[in-house]
Image (cartoon, rainbow, N blue to C red):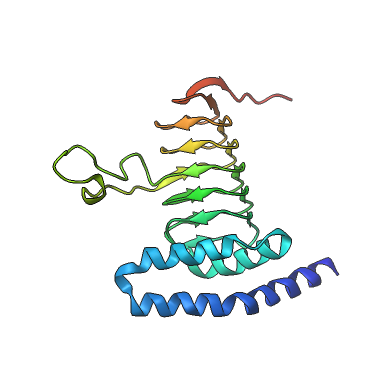
Length: 198
């Protein structure tokens, strides 16, 4: 019975989301140069629906718009994507009010609330003083959060996090995090390692 109710909820969510999805596709066709901006606006719209209904609607929307999105994920209220070029694995939980760039969240990743994952450390070049920073370009890279990792509330991540790692609340990750490492601080440093214990 529970499975039937869930399937019915997914069908209803798809019916509600379809006009938003078609509107996005229309914007893609009319303004191909502004593809990222169009997607961001629609992601912001989808982030505003609270509760279980919002979770169902976001799942239906992102399954059709992101590079890959597993059907058993939860993207919470207030969370937005900067690009449709995101990969979301199975069993992923993303807390409320997160901002995600070019990211791959592998299976069973947990993000607390207010987590920011940028598109690498070089999104904006700023070396020259004769040109405004906004005109100097940048380099977008995919940041991968490895299997079974947990990013604590308010963490800012600009580099890859290996599988089974933990990033402490409020940490600022500017260099790759090793497998099973527990990191904290600004900049984040290894404070411990996860050990297997029976």
